[in-house]
Length: 438
Image 1 (cartoon, rainbow, N blue to C red):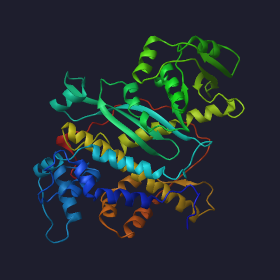
Image 2: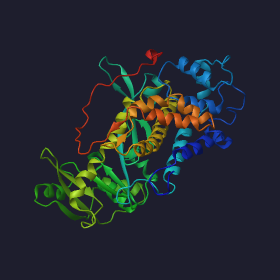
Image 3: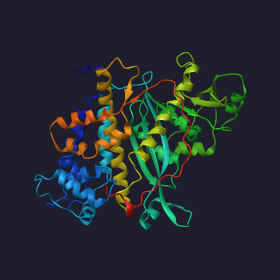
Image 4: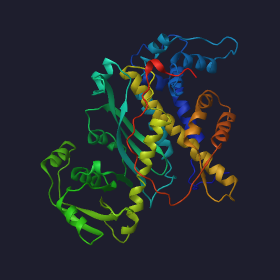
């Protein structure tokens, strides 16, 4: 029996809250592109189309449709059949923001009681951007932008960004947009999700005076790795024998002032702390932080703290290589956005169930040499169809069965491991006309 304060969320209650929302008439009304949509009795109802898109559409679309209709059919002998054309017409009526709305509910419920793992009282977050390969279509090229391939064909590509909870593996907010939008621009779209007592761990791509000042005004703390030649004070500090120094930022570039002006903020002098970190290979990194109390936040903690940012890198790896977030089921802007935000929501559902299962699993056998964590790749494969049954039924058996499958082949957690940065590799592309049938 769980007790209040044991840092364990009741994941099934969060899932039930979202399930109730999916079946609500208010949600359907807010999710339709037009008032008259989903008013006639169709084979794929509003709820069915939501569940179908959530069910990880990675094989041929017709096979996915056939299997799904068998899954939700009330009669096992005469399941309904539906065509790809009917699905396309039905999905065209659905606003992609419906999946973002459901993810906002998940995030709201998860953080509602302040009972979740933190670092020194902070919600430990990171932001990072990436790119997303898209299937070929002229509509996608026009909307998202493109890059030129080896054979002079312009391939559509999108910019993505995530605000991620490093300790709880929750994607609080996500964006997919034009490749021409920069990481700073997309980062600003996450700002309304930031709160007091958030601590952002950011890579050097986010080093900017205006961003530091803005976060301080929002009472959101940060640790950011600085690129060389960022400001003179940081370069001098890098070459000095000091490991921690508090400096005053008296002025900033006019571009930073303009950026703040657009946010309705006037720049004023503020304090910034510089921290030096020596990597295992001897390289020196300089971090900028708003945690200026040198007694409360000792210099020695910052190396480990900064490298906790690694989890957002592994999250992107999970999204791209295991969830296959680039394996889209359509060639329209609407389909891309629906699939993307549905995949983010499913990744968060997986994280909720993993947290529930890991707590239970490690309590069952306390004699193990190492604590164990769930195999993220294998557990996501088990969610196919089974998670939809949880959303279709009130029987708790389906949730318990899925947790038992999550316990298959757990991975031991060994301390003190070192990680190298990912090397860029040529990723497999997902071709719309070569989607697998099995």
